[in-house]
Image (cartoon, rainbow, N blue to C red; front, side, top):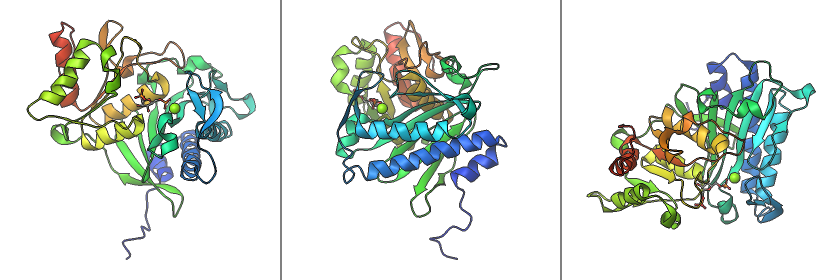
Length: 341
Ligand code: AHM
Ligand code: MG
Protein backbone atom coordinates (compact mmCIF):
# COMPACT_ATOMS: atom_id res chain seq x y z
CA UNK A 1 0.00 0.00 0.00
CA UNK A 2 1.30 3.48 -0.81
CA UNK A 3 1.60 5.81 2.15
CA UNK A 4 0.98 8.74 -0.22
CA UNK A 5 -2.57 7.74 -1.11
CA UNK A 6 -5.27 7.22 1.45
CA UNK A 7 -7.98 5.01 0.00
CA UNK A 8 -10.16 5.75 3.03
CA UNK A 9 -9.76 9.52 3.60
CA UNK A 10 -12.25 11.19 5.91
CA UNK A 11 -13.29 14.29 4.03
CA UNK A 12 -15.10 17.12 5.82
CA UNK A 13 -18.32 16.01 4.14
CA UNK A 14 -17.93 12.43 5.36
CA UNK A 15 -17.04 13.67 8.85
CA UNK A 16 -20.18 15.84 9.00
CA UNK A 17 -22.36 13.02 7.67
CA UNK A 18 -21.06 10.70 10.37
CA UNK A 19 -22.08 13.25 13.00
CA UNK A 20 -25.56 14.23 11.83
CA UNK A 21 -28.52 12.87 9.87
CA UNK A 22 -29.70 16.44 9.28
CA UNK A 23 -29.23 16.73 5.52
CA UNK A 24 -29.68 20.50 5.63
CA UNK A 25 -26.72 20.81 7.99
CA UNK A 26 -24.62 18.64 5.65
CA UNK A 27 -25.60 20.89 2.72
CA UNK A 28 -24.82 24.01 4.75
CA UNK A 29 -21.33 22.90 5.72
CA UNK A 30 -20.70 21.78 2.17
CA UNK A 31 -21.62 25.28 0.95
CA UNK A 32 -19.30 26.88 3.51
CA UNK A 33 -16.47 24.53 2.49
CA UNK A 34 -17.04 25.31 -1.19
CA UNK A 35 -16.87 29.05 -0.57
CA UNK A 36 -13.65 28.59 1.43
CA UNK A 37 -12.14 26.70 -1.51
CA UNK A 38 -13.11 29.57 -3.80
CA UNK A 39 -11.60 32.06 -1.34
CA UNK A 40 -8.43 29.92 -1.24
CA UNK A 41 -8.14 30.25 -5.00
CA UNK A 42 -8.69 34.02 -4.86
CA UNK A 43 -6.13 34.48 -2.06
CA UNK A 44 -3.54 32.34 -3.83
CA UNK A 45 -4.07 34.09 -7.20
CA UNK A 46 -4.42 37.59 -5.72
CA UNK A 47 -1.17 38.85 -7.25
CA UNK A 48 -1.66 37.57 -10.78
CA UNK A 49 -5.38 38.36 -10.75
CA UNK A 50 -4.65 41.93 -9.57
CA UNK A 51 -6.78 41.57 -6.46
CA UNK A 52 -4.55 43.53 -4.08
CA UNK A 53 -5.71 46.94 -2.95
CA UNK A 54 -8.90 48.72 -2.04
CA UNK A 55 -12.32 48.20 -3.58
CA UNK A 56 -13.24 51.82 -2.85
CA UNK A 57 -15.96 51.07 -0.28
CA UNK A 58 -16.19 51.15 3.53
CA UNK A 59 -17.62 48.14 5.43
CA UNK A 60 -20.12 47.88 8.32
CA UNK A 61 -17.49 48.83 10.90
CA UNK A 62 -16.01 51.71 8.96
CA UNK A 63 -12.94 49.89 7.61
CA UNK A 64 -11.86 50.31 3.99
CA UNK A 65 -12.89 47.26 1.99
CA UNK A 66 -10.19 45.44 0.02
CA UNK A 67 -10.93 43.84 -3.35
CA UNK A 68 -10.37 40.40 -1.82
CA UNK A 69 -12.75 41.23 1.07
CA UNK A 70 -15.50 42.03 -1.42
CA UNK A 71 -14.84 39.00 -3.60
CA UNK A 72 -14.69 36.62 -0.61
CA UNK A 73 -17.92 38.07 0.70
CA UNK A 74 -19.66 37.56 -2.66
CA UNK A 75 -18.41 33.98 -2.76
CA UNK A 76 -19.85 33.18 0.66
CA UNK A 77 -23.15 34.93 0.07
CA UNK A 78 -23.69 33.25 -3.31
CA UNK A 79 -22.89 29.79 -1.95
CA UNK A 80 -25.06 30.20 1.16
CA UNK A 81 -28.08 31.87 -0.47
CA UNK A 82 -28.17 29.19 -3.18
CA UNK A 83 -27.69 26.31 -0.75
CA UNK A 84 -31.43 26.47 -0.03
CA UNK A 85 -30.89 25.86 3.69
CA UNK A 86 -30.30 29.42 5.02
CA UNK A 87 -32.82 32.13 5.86
CA UNK A 88 -30.59 34.97 7.12
CA UNK A 89 -26.91 35.82 6.77
CA UNK A 90 -24.84 38.37 8.65
CA UNK A 91 -21.50 39.37 7.18
CA UNK A 92 -18.87 41.75 8.49
CA UNK A 93 -18.92 43.32 5.04
CA UNK A 94 -22.67 44.09 4.97
CA UNK A 95 -24.23 46.75 7.15
CA UNK A 96 -27.64 45.05 7.00
CA UNK A 97 -28.52 41.36 7.41
CA UNK A 98 -29.07 39.48 4.14
CA UNK A 99 -32.54 37.96 4.06
CA UNK A 100 -32.75 34.93 1.77
CA UNK A 101 -35.78 35.08 -0.61
CA UNK A 102 -38.62 32.71 0.44
CA UNK A 103 -38.15 30.36 -2.56
CA UNK A 104 -34.58 29.61 -1.47
CA UNK A 105 -34.92 29.90 2.31
CA UNK A 106 -34.19 27.18 4.87
CA UNK A 107 -33.78 26.98 8.64
CA UNK A 108 -30.16 28.05 9.16
CA UNK A 109 -28.75 31.46 10.08
CA UNK A 110 -25.06 32.08 9.47
CA UNK A 111 -22.80 34.90 10.66
CA UNK A 112 -19.37 35.20 9.05
CA UNK A 113 -16.30 37.28 8.50
CA UNK A 114 -15.39 36.21 4.96
CA UNK A 115 -11.78 37.40 5.09
CA UNK A 116 -10.50 38.28 8.51
CA UNK A 117 -7.18 40.08 8.90
CA UNK A 118 -7.75 42.71 6.22
CA UNK A 119 -4.61 44.63 7.12
CA UNK A 120 -2.54 41.55 6.16
CA UNK A 121 -4.11 40.84 2.77
CA UNK A 122 -1.79 42.88 0.59
CA UNK A 123 1.46 41.52 2.04
CA UNK A 124 0.62 37.80 1.90
CA UNK A 125 0.43 37.31 5.67
CA UNK A 126 -2.11 34.70 6.84
CA UNK A 127 -5.77 35.65 6.68
CA UNK A 128 -8.88 33.66 7.50
CA UNK A 129 -12.62 33.05 7.39
CA UNK A 130 -14.69 32.73 10.58
CA UNK A 131 -18.30 31.52 10.87
CA UNK A 132 -21.00 30.65 13.38
CA UNK A 133 -24.29 28.84 12.67
CA UNK A 134 -27.67 29.09 14.43
CA UNK A 135 -31.10 27.61 13.77
CA UNK A 136 -33.89 30.16 13.31
CA UNK A 137 -36.23 30.62 16.26
CA UNK A 138 -39.53 28.68 16.20
CA UNK A 139 -42.10 30.52 14.05
CA UNK A 140 -39.52 32.87 12.51
CA UNK A 141 -39.09 33.26 8.77
CA UNK A 142 -35.56 34.49 9.29
CA UNK A 143 -34.53 37.92 10.52
CA UNK A 144 -31.65 39.56 12.39
CA UNK A 145 -33.48 38.63 15.64
CA UNK A 146 -32.59 34.99 14.99
CA UNK A 147 -28.93 35.87 15.50
CA UNK A 148 -29.28 38.20 18.47
CA UNK A 149 -28.92 35.46 21.07
CA UNK A 150 -26.37 34.02 23.43
CA UNK A 151 -23.41 32.03 22.15
CA UNK A 152 -24.92 29.07 24.02
CA UNK A 153 -27.37 28.74 21.09
CA UNK A 154 -24.64 28.47 18.47
CA UNK A 155 -24.91 25.05 16.76
CA UNK A 156 -21.46 24.89 15.23
CA UNK A 157 -18.55 27.19 14.51
CA UNK A 158 -15.33 27.18 12.58
CA UNK A 159 -12.51 29.08 11.02
CA UNK A 160 -10.29 28.58 8.00
CA UNK A 161 -6.71 29.83 7.96
CA UNK A 162 -5.24 30.60 4.52
CA UNK A 163 -1.51 30.17 4.98
CA UNK A 164 1.30 27.82 3.93
CA UNK A 165 -1.48 25.24 4.19
CA UNK A 166 -5.22 25.92 4.18
CA UNK A 167 -6.82 24.46 7.26
CA UNK A 168 -10.36 24.45 8.64
CA UNK A 169 -10.89 24.06 12.37
CA UNK A 170 -14.43 23.15 13.23
CA UNK A 171 -16.65 22.09 16.11
CA UNK A 172 -20.26 21.19 16.79
CA UNK A 173 -21.74 22.53 20.05
CA UNK A 174 -20.66 20.42 23.01
CA UNK A 175 -18.33 18.34 20.89
CA UNK A 176 -14.62 17.98 20.14
CA UNK A 177 -12.62 20.32 17.92
CA UNK A 178 -11.27 18.89 14.66
CA UNK A 179 -8.88 20.10 11.95
CA UNK A 180 -9.18 19.56 8.19
CA UNK A 181 -6.45 20.43 5.68
CA UNK A 182 -7.37 21.33 2.13
CA UNK A 183 -5.79 18.72 -0.15
CA UNK A 184 -5.45 20.66 -3.39
CA UNK A 185 -4.90 17.46 -5.39
CA UNK A 186 -8.47 16.34 -4.72
CA UNK A 187 -10.05 19.68 -3.83
CA UNK A 188 -11.32 18.41 -0.47
CA UNK A 189 -10.83 19.27 3.18
CA UNK A 190 -9.41 16.10 4.73
CA UNK A 191 -9.56 15.27 8.45
CA UNK A 192 -6.03 15.81 9.77
CA UNK A 193 -6.39 16.74 13.45
CA UNK A 194 -8.46 14.57 15.75
CA UNK A 195 -9.70 16.18 18.97
CA UNK A 196 -7.64 19.37 19.18
CA UNK A 197 -6.91 20.41 22.76
CA UNK A 198 -4.65 22.97 24.41
CA UNK A 199 -1.24 21.56 25.30
CA UNK A 200 -1.05 19.91 28.72
CA UNK A 201 0.32 22.27 31.41
CA UNK A 202 -0.33 25.26 29.13
CA UNK A 203 2.33 24.68 26.46
CA UNK A 204 4.50 27.52 25.23
CA UNK A 205 4.49 30.78 27.15
CA UNK A 206 3.33 33.16 24.44
CA UNK A 207 1.36 36.37 24.82
CA UNK A 208 -0.32 37.91 21.80
CA UNK A 209 -1.84 41.39 21.69
CA UNK A 210 -1.39 44.74 19.99
CA UNK A 211 0.78 46.52 22.55
CA UNK A 212 0.53 49.68 20.47
CA UNK A 213 -2.79 50.12 22.30
CA UNK A 214 -1.24 49.68 25.77
CA UNK A 215 -1.55 53.32 26.82
CA UNK A 216 -5.33 52.98 26.59
CA UNK A 217 -5.63 49.65 28.46
CA UNK A 218 -6.89 49.38 32.01
CA UNK A 219 -4.27 48.76 34.73
CA UNK A 220 -4.86 45.00 35.21
CA UNK A 221 -4.24 44.32 31.49
CA UNK A 222 -1.05 46.42 31.62
CA UNK A 223 -0.02 44.52 34.78
CA UNK A 224 -0.71 41.16 33.13
CA UNK A 225 1.59 42.06 30.23
CA UNK A 226 4.26 43.22 32.72
CA UNK A 227 3.91 39.84 34.40
CA UNK A 228 4.27 38.00 31.08
CA UNK A 229 7.49 39.88 30.31
CA UNK A 230 8.96 39.92 33.81
CA UNK A 231 8.04 36.50 35.18
CA UNK A 232 10.76 33.99 36.05
CA UNK A 233 10.10 32.24 32.77
CA UNK A 234 9.44 35.23 30.52
CA UNK A 235 6.85 34.87 27.78
CA UNK A 236 7.54 35.34 24.08
CA UNK A 237 5.51 37.97 22.20
CA UNK A 238 3.80 36.85 18.97
CA UNK A 239 1.15 38.90 17.20
CA UNK A 240 0.20 38.27 13.58
CA UNK A 241 -2.70 40.71 13.59
CA UNK A 242 -5.01 38.15 11.94
CA UNK A 243 -7.20 36.69 14.67
CA UNK A 244 -7.50 33.35 12.90
CA UNK A 245 -3.71 32.90 12.75
CA UNK A 246 -3.18 34.09 16.32
CA UNK A 247 -5.92 31.83 17.70
CA UNK A 248 -4.74 28.83 15.64
CA UNK A 249 -1.24 29.21 17.08
CA UNK A 250 -2.64 29.69 20.59
CA UNK A 251 -4.56 26.39 20.46
CA UNK A 252 -1.67 24.45 18.94
CA UNK A 253 1.24 25.89 20.92
CA UNK A 254 -0.44 27.37 24.01
CA UNK A 255 -0.46 30.93 25.35
CA UNK A 256 -2.95 33.78 25.43
CA UNK A 257 -4.50 36.08 22.81
CA UNK A 258 -6.03 39.39 23.89
CA UNK A 259 -7.91 42.21 22.23
CA UNK A 260 -9.15 43.92 25.41
CA UNK A 261 -11.51 46.82 25.89
CA UNK A 262 -9.63 50.10 26.26
CA UNK A 263 -10.25 53.77 26.93
CA UNK A 264 -10.69 54.48 23.21
CA UNK A 265 -12.74 51.37 22.40
CA UNK A 266 -14.70 50.50 25.55
CA UNK A 267 -16.28 47.48 23.80
CA UNK A 268 -13.01 46.31 22.21
CA UNK A 269 -12.53 45.94 18.47
CA UNK A 270 -13.63 42.44 17.56
CA UNK A 271 -17.18 41.54 16.60
CA UNK A 272 -19.20 39.19 18.77
CA UNK A 273 -21.25 37.27 16.19
CA UNK A 274 -18.57 36.35 13.70
CA UNK A 275 -15.34 36.68 15.68
CA UNK A 276 -15.96 36.44 19.44
CA UNK A 277 -18.61 33.70 19.68
CA UNK A 278 -17.23 31.22 17.12
CA UNK A 279 -13.69 31.53 18.45
CA UNK A 280 -14.91 31.29 22.07
CA UNK A 281 -16.80 28.08 21.30
CA UNK A 282 -13.75 26.53 19.66
CA UNK A 283 -11.38 27.67 22.44
CA UNK A 284 -13.62 26.39 25.25
CA UNK A 285 -14.26 23.07 23.52
CA UNK A 286 -10.50 22.68 23.07
CA UNK A 287 -10.13 23.05 26.86
CA UNK A 288 -9.26 26.76 26.97
CA UNK A 289 -10.91 29.86 28.41
CA UNK A 290 -12.70 32.61 26.48
CA UNK A 291 -13.41 35.66 28.60
CA UNK A 292 -14.28 39.29 27.99
CA UNK A 293 -12.05 40.45 30.84
CA UNK A 294 -13.69 43.27 32.80
CA UNK A 295 -16.63 44.38 30.65
CA UNK A 296 -19.93 46.04 31.58
CA UNK A 297 -19.13 45.82 35.29
CA UNK A 298 -17.93 42.21 35.51
CA UNK A 299 -15.72 39.50 34.09
CA UNK A 300 -17.82 37.38 31.74
CA UNK A 301 -17.62 34.38 29.42
CA UNK A 302 -17.80 35.49 25.80
CA UNK A 303 -20.38 32.75 25.19
CA UNK A 304 -22.72 34.32 27.77
CA UNK A 305 -22.94 37.62 25.92
CA UNK A 306 -26.04 38.42 23.87
CA UNK A 307 -25.38 40.82 20.97
CA UNK A 308 -27.66 43.86 20.99
CA UNK A 309 -27.05 44.41 17.28
CA UNK A 310 -25.61 42.26 14.52
CA UNK A 311 -22.23 44.02 14.46
CA UNK A 312 -21.89 44.29 18.27
CA UNK A 313 -18.31 44.26 19.55
CA UNK A 314 -16.76 42.49 22.52
CA UNK A 315 -13.40 42.49 24.30
CA UNK A 316 -11.49 39.20 24.03
CA UNK A 317 -9.13 37.44 26.45
CA UNK A 318 -8.68 33.88 25.16
CA UNK A 319 -6.19 31.15 25.81
CA UNK A 320 -5.07 28.34 28.04
CA UNK A 321 -6.09 28.29 31.71
CA UNK A 322 -2.58 28.96 33.05
CA UNK A 323 -2.27 32.18 31.08
CA UNK A 324 -5.83 33.56 31.36
CA UNK A 325 -5.51 33.03 35.13
CA UNK A 326 -2.64 35.55 35.09
CA UNK A 327 -5.08 38.19 33.81
CA UNK A 328 -7.76 37.22 36.34
CA UNK A 329 -5.14 37.46 39.13
CA UNK A 330 -4.35 41.04 38.13
CA UNK A 331 -8.07 41.89 38.21
CA UNK A 332 -8.28 40.32 41.67
CA UNK A 333 -5.43 42.56 42.87
CA UNK A 334 -7.46 45.52 41.59
CA UNK A 335 -10.47 44.35 43.65
CA UNK A 336 -12.38 42.82 40.70
CA UNK A 337 -13.63 39.28 41.32
CA UNK A 338 -13.07 36.72 38.64
CA UNK A 339 -13.16 32.95 38.40
CA UNK A 340 -10.35 30.73 39.64
CA UNK A 341 -9.58 28.35 36.77
P1 AHM B 1 -10.85 42.83 10.37
O1 AHM B 1 -12.02 41.91 10.52
O2 AHM B 1 -11.19 44.17 9.83
O3 AHM B 1 -9.73 42.17 9.62
O4 AHM B 1 -10.34 43.13 11.88
C1 AHM B 1 -10.15 42.04 12.73
C2 AHM B 1 -8.68 41.88 12.96
C3 AHM B 1 -8.33 40.61 13.67
O5 AHM B 1 -8.11 39.56 12.78
C4 AHM B 1 -7.06 40.98 14.38
O6 AHM B 1 -6.83 40.20 15.50
C5 AHM B 1 -7.28 42.42 14.71
O7 AHM B 1 -8.24 42.92 13.82
C6 AHM B 1 -6.04 43.22 14.55
O8 AHM B 1 -6.31 44.53 14.89
P2 AHM B 1 -5.13 45.61 15.07
O9 AHM B 1 -4.62 45.87 13.70
O10 AHM B 1 -5.82 46.78 15.71
O11 AHM B 1 -4.11 44.98 15.96
MG1 MG C 1 -12.61 41.18 8.15
